[in-house]
Length: 186
Image (cartoon, rainbow, N blue to C red; front, side, top):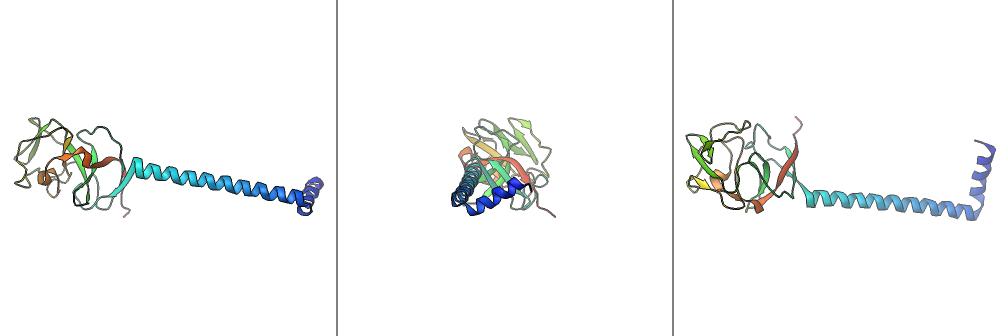
């Protein structure tokens, strides 16, 4: 240390006015840091509770795309959904399902001989696994989707609980669209 720096340090330690100024500066710095941290926390809350959400895949209905216990981060504010989008659904019983949209409003869905048809054309998603069979007698085919309705299926078609069981889904029951997922570390 230089002599001037040593003198200044000694002077700060013994001069009450300089010592008080140093304390005020330290308080100001702590206050600014605390305010910045609080603002960051508020921003994260806004992002994760208003704009985005997190859900967990329960079961193998989305295999091979998603696996049991994968974490799914989704965007809440989506104005339009398209076939192929993976979405998180809020079911009436409180469960959240992660499924793939295969048809949207105005489309006609039919299932015949283990195949999915949308608007009369066989529709296949490269991620799907197994045959697409009727699952319940409550849903009569062909199904014409109304305004604000989508038809969802799991990628693992033979074990998925989806629109083949509970019918078309209203878009207001969609929590959001998948942004990315975090696979379970094995």
